[in-house]
Length: 473
Image (cartoon, rainbow, N blue to C red; front, top):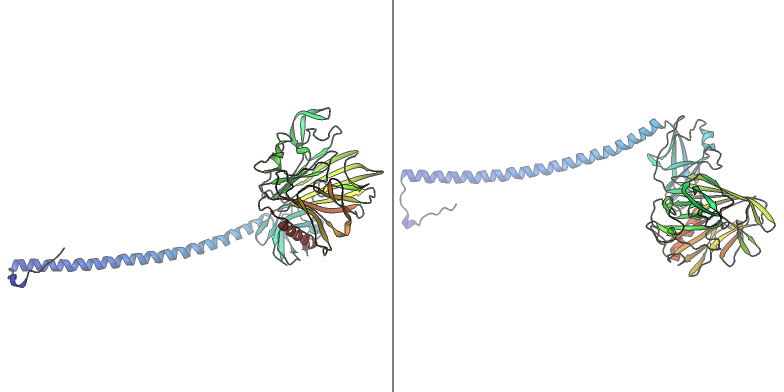
């Protein structure tokens, strides 16, 4: 609304009625402006209040969230205490000046029960502070009773962790964890052998198997021709027949896959699938880490035997193990009985191979298949404890880059040599026992190693970890 005063020369005297109306209009205008100022102040006040409330609500929410977190931790800890009222605390030290991821912790039940005779291995949980660690029990000697608890956890350099094992004195109360390792053995049932080929039937996983005398290579009796084991990094198998050589399953996923491999025949896993594939050509070689004996200039695999039994010792969430007994292994004039124990841990590419042999052999050997387009890697001469022989290059069946290594104690070494098919380390068993490791590292695995330099650095770190095992104080 716009008000305009007439020019002075045209100004006229207003009547009483007009003057009263004009005065009313001015008062109304003043009231309108005053009301506008009050409205502005009011809404600014509301905004200020809103902002204050927002800050207040945020602070209250943050406080409640913090208290809720503490409450959840306390509640979880109290739940563990109620379910597992007894406790043993064990300091575990990383003596190395470097961090470790998924380090294996082995707690021997005999020692636990020496401190707590009432310890119950059927109702326990392993904690670090309030963090629950995935764990399992293992029956190492396959006598039906657990011998150890195994878990994995991370360590900072020189860190000591106080691990608490809570338990209930009676009953059975197990925990469930994501599966990060697997071992399996699957044979056919419901069919029959016809001229050393198994016809009909369907595959069925079994805990143990005595290999029938009719079985040989490509009998279609054992799924993917032998037992398999895997971690969230890599998978392996060995031929449960006269070849007795180890092969590699390259994995493109951290999930467990072996349960789906080879269900439709032998050839399916030689082609790339979503999960990965068989990446190694073994042939007449030692493949990766196969057990053999150095005799007359060649590596003699465990080919001629009287009988073989194979059992899944552990199919666990953080560790899996396979035990194979070879009776009457013949090499030259010698006859030997062998117990082979293969194990793998969560988060690791390493297979540990523990061998016990009767018959007083002069040596055992292992090695890596000789393939083109590779470089050979050797550990620094300064290594006094564990060391390795390794190859890296475009040696997978894809073809793409694959690293392979065998790791052994330098004190066990007799010589590094080769034959027509394999690069070989000849080792000396002590009192009929020998331990070595082997591994494969495929470039397509999640976070895969893609250069020889990266592979050498990884091997040096692995050797350093083997040289500095965790200490349970």
